[in-house]
Length: 220
Image (tube, rainbow, N blue to C red; front, top):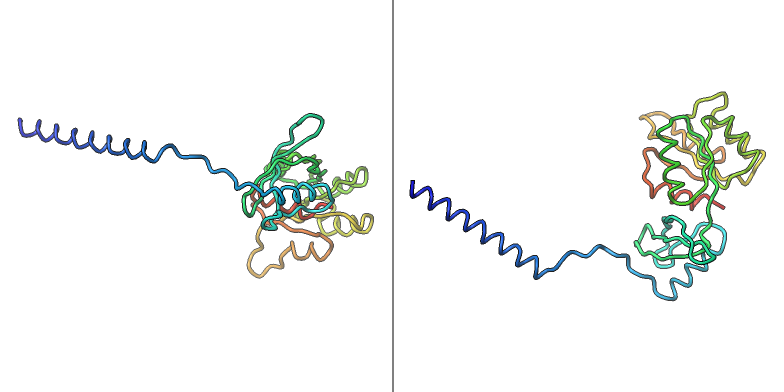
């Protein structure tokens, strides 16, 4: 009995000693800092802000990658956003970040909701349609900057016909085709849609970064 008590006491002392040693190491190392982006140099920051003033996709002046856009906020009389490079992870706060108006043509609620959340979370305006015919009518009423369309969207008009008719009436339309990975031996529908006039494609399922990158690549 006494031997068991001594063993238990020795074990508790060893555990306490280990605990104290770990605390001492933690105090020496100090608390972990949150990872912060590498700042741009003054010259890079000036170039970045200048690029956001011009139309077209904006490339990182440090590595050439595209950006993720944060939510817009007011700073005095201007609207600014925090932008983060998807390549080197550098970040900055810039004004004049252009919001895109985006039409999403997708029958499945879960995909449509996901795209809406990603795009509106980045500050873009989103219009939705559940089939290509409704999407074409919406485009004709108020042309958006970019169109997302699921190449398998159901309806009286398929995605290929939508792209043909839209490009005929609006040659500058910026169309992004979406589809999952094709089965072995089946023609890739994204390749077909791209030959018809889609300027970018994206595979489902997609990440937030992939969606925002393809928008910046496609928008005028």
